[in-house]
Image 1 (cartoon, rainbow, N blue to C red):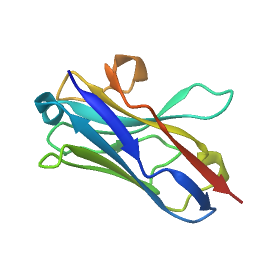
Image 2 (image 1 turned 90 degrees about the vertical axis):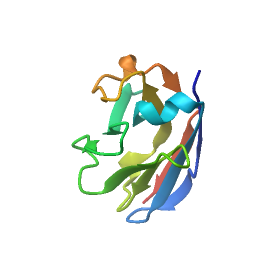
Image 3 (image 1 turned 120 degrees about the horizontal axis):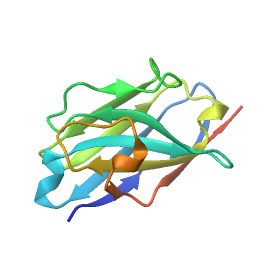
Amino acid sequence: QVQLSESGGGLAQAWGSLRLSCAGSGSAFSSYAAGWVRQAPLKGRELVATIMADGTSPDYGDAVKGRFTISRDNAKNTVYLQMDKLQPEDTAVYYCAAIRSSLPSTQPAHYAYWGQGTQVTVSS
């Protein structure tokens, strides 16, 4: 069983930065691909970024490409999301998720494990 816990959310100004962390428990976490998913009020879930279990092949949604960077440190069982050049439209609850595969999926529904989420609010 894998448990995930996010931290690092908060309030930022437009063009500012935040760094989210996702701590995973359980020895299997390092063998699972991971991703960050966000959900804004009255909107569906949006896959923001994914990364393979070994930390390679980061991939991004079009809305954040060039501004966000996903990485992981398997020695610390932690996945990160560095968010730069934040915009008000990035305001959402951000969830860390893990999939029971070394390869990520573009479909949030395929992810078996989820954190509780962390709020990110960007003011203009």
